[in-house]
Image 1: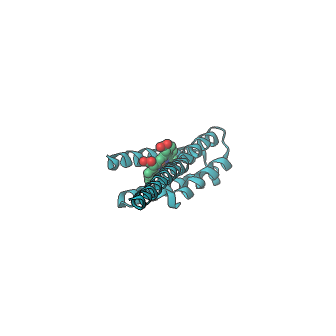
Image 2: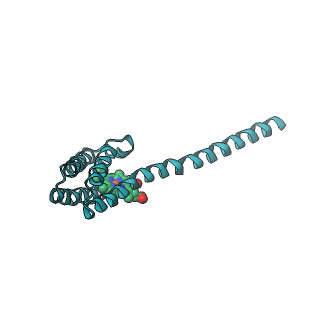
Image 3: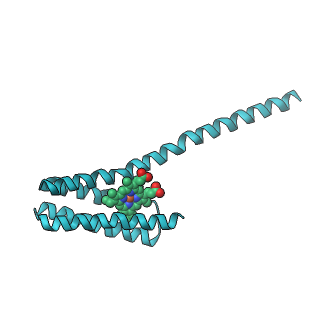
Length: 132
Ligand code: HEC
């Protein structure tokens, strides 16, 4: 009887430790992903700053950073053909914007910025549609 209670206690403690371990782990990984995704927003703001102040280095840098993010492992939240395609299209637009920055072409960069932004919005619309 005593022995059974002892084993029962050990199991309870183990279950409790496991549960708190899992609770501690999960929000952390979610927060990591959120930080990773939110970085896109600060790059976009920097791009707008670069366009409005005609700072081509800023444009080229942050467009390239966006293209690189899209190749990161953390970006690959979904494995659907649609998601992969949208990621590819986004990268193409970000690379074109970076190129417009490098060649100091403000008109091309302005259009490129709009195109990149449309890709943000479209992919987010798509992601919401498959999350429901
Ligand atoms: C190919 C798809 C795709 C593109 C393109 C894309 N995103 Fe995202 N974005 C995601 C996914 C997936 C998430 C994570 C969604 C989730 O947590 O459910 C996300 C999350 C975010 C978040 C975090 C939202 C939160 O929960 O705080 C922000 C901000 C964001 N994206 C901004 C942008 C910006 C700005 C761009 C364009 C420069 C962009 N995204 C382009 C797929 C994309």
